[in-house]
Amino acid sequence: MRTVITGGAGFVGSHLCERFLAEGHDVICVDNLLTGHLRNIEHLGADPKFTFRKHNISEPLLIDGPIGNILHFASPASPADYLAHPIPTLKVGALGTHNALGLAKAKDARILLASTSEVYGDPDVHPQREDYWGHVNPIGPRGCYDEAKRFAEAITMAYHRHHGVKTRIVRIFNTYGPRMRLNDGRVLPAFMGQVLRGEPLTVFGEGQQTRSFCYVTDLVDGIYRLLHAEYSEPVNIGNPVELTVMELAREIIAMVPGTASTIDYRDLPEDDPKRRRPDITHARSLLGWEPTVDREEGLKRTLAYFRTVI
Ligand code: NAD
Ligand code: UDP
Image 1 (tube, rainbow, N blue to C red):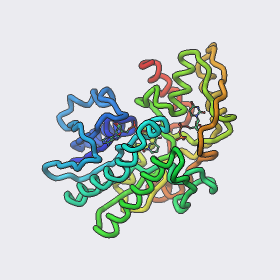
Image 2: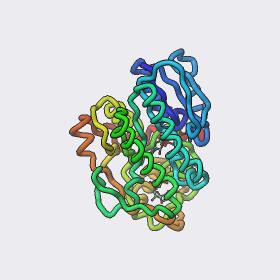
Image 3: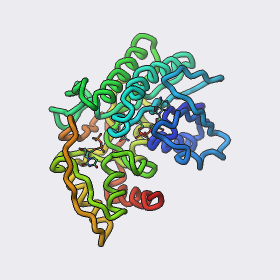
Image 4: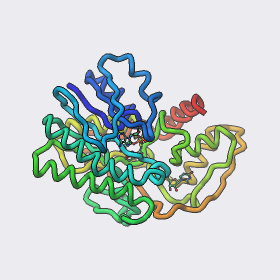
């Protein structure tokens, strides 16, 4: 079985490459290294089943021979990254997804789209179920990412309904773990970098906004199960344990006894979602999936990783 993973040199993508290799697949990792890095996959380079193609998936991709699966994960993902690259973000969600779907159709392959909880915007329904249509500002700073992913979902469903392509859509909620970029601006690497350097933690707003953090191996397991399920509608994958950003800051400070870190309050970014928690009823019943790594353990493993790269 040959599996193409776009965005495979990124944080989540590199863990997917590992998992699919471990399951015996030949893995073709396609990445233009916009926000990813070769060091995330260098340990896979010696495996004869692994190949890397440096390619921008917003341009058509030709691959010889049969392909069984495509996991389309290419896209800037952190708010700082998509604010820095709004047009490549829109292009990879639209043109990149079109190219990935075209490849799936040509090869009669299954394709799984990495969508996001951002399709729910700043939600006025809580927790978020898949049948909630969302509350998104299309012209705000996050619009380039949110609308790209909403378009990506729409074209994926169109390829499914119109062309009969075997499609899957995962709506990923905040995920963390080793190989996140220390400076990608997301809250977890930001706080962990700050605590390890003894700097104040930059809490945006009053830190009362909530998120629900899923450890990366749990996410990867949910994705693996969803790919093999006969279900084309979106499925939330995330950890339903919700906490405020301030609670997270305090937990991370407590992990480094004796640290000089305090809290530094900064302005809340525009359109920052106030509450986010996945309803995972679907994932539980369809996939028999739920998270297994609790936050204490996940944070410990992630901090240990950041200590090696700081
Ligand atoms: P990441 O930035 O680490 O990985 C994205 C990868 O895509 C990078 O390696 C980047 O170089 C590559 N890429 C970007 N544009 C590309 C293009 N045009 N052609 C080829 N490669 C390109 O981010 P991540 O956290 O690993 O996110 C991976 C996917 O999961 C994204 O699609 C993201 O939207 C989705 N997602 C992630 C989270 C999360 O919490 N990590 C949450 C929701 C959705
Ligand atoms: N955040 C913060 N300090 C930081 C980075 C982020 O307080 O240095 C907050 C941010 O305002 C948001 C939450 O943490 O409410 C999660 O932000 P992140 O960028 O990780 O991802 P998001 O869930 O917003 O896409």
